[in-house]
Image (cartoon, rainbow, N blue to C red; front, top):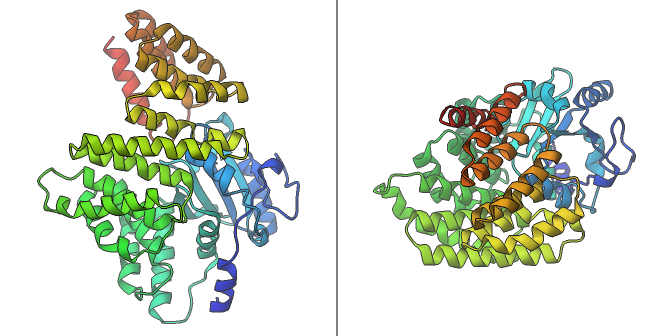
Length: 445
């Protein structure tokens, strides 16, 4: 690929028409239109058209998933990338998604996949978010062919692509080696360096190699340009740092990451999504508490809440506003004021009467406040609306409420229902661990 073509491509942004999502075929030829909850149909189309298949694996409870829909996939600037892929969206909570989940294991939401339609092998597995322009760059990496150019940049790009493929197949150790090779080969000014550092940090964190992860973040973040990659490198570094032993010498290096994280969350000019900025606020609260700095944790928590309130107030529509509900609740819990979430959750319950998220979040708030009758009623409203694996979390919350009401027999029956359901479902990610926890809780009652 020529440098001119790459520069032209990096100017593109991804545009997805959320309002025009279709069950069987796109409704527009000028926008990215997703084939909704029909992976097999999307794969057939991709094979017929000899295009790779992009899959947005998401869930209705996932705030980052909703942020991608509301603020990235519908970015209105440009649409030229549409013809390069067939686009599909898979709600991983639905029964119809179980076949997809058996083929493509995932631990995080959203996970963005690019699948070779001819072989049905994953080319790319990307957990988390990106801005529209960053997503365009990420997808361009999928189309790169190994160059005959022997330059260091070409060698680094080849290792980066191999690492992506290893990560997509859940061969985490092999992915780490390839990403490390990419960094070793890359010239200092290589534009892809930040994405490699981000991917390596995430793989190290997922592998619980906390010291390596923190050391990487401390060493590399100053070299990563502004954007989502730098935010995520700092985020992973702080999370891994909190997992280090209290006497680990590397902990002395973490204040620099804390200062950078604070700068990112407070700088309106930082080119990152509000949802990602919010995740960094959350990590800062956790890091300050991990280090026994409660006053600073509270101060950051209050700033986090104000930031999210401002974002919600200027959201273009109720869907965009509700993106921030879950993190606003976390922010209010962080400052020990969960009751502040009640008005926003009541509004979301009115705006989205068929959605389970607002009532189950209200149940959590009422439980924290000791308003147990209201908590139980809200959890039962959520149960009537929820579907798929998320039902396990709703029923787990309902059991918590019943135990707080000193009704252990009823709590046990709820847990038994949850276990029975979980054993019939294809459970992705942490749901399998949740099912084990529910079994243990049931046995203890």
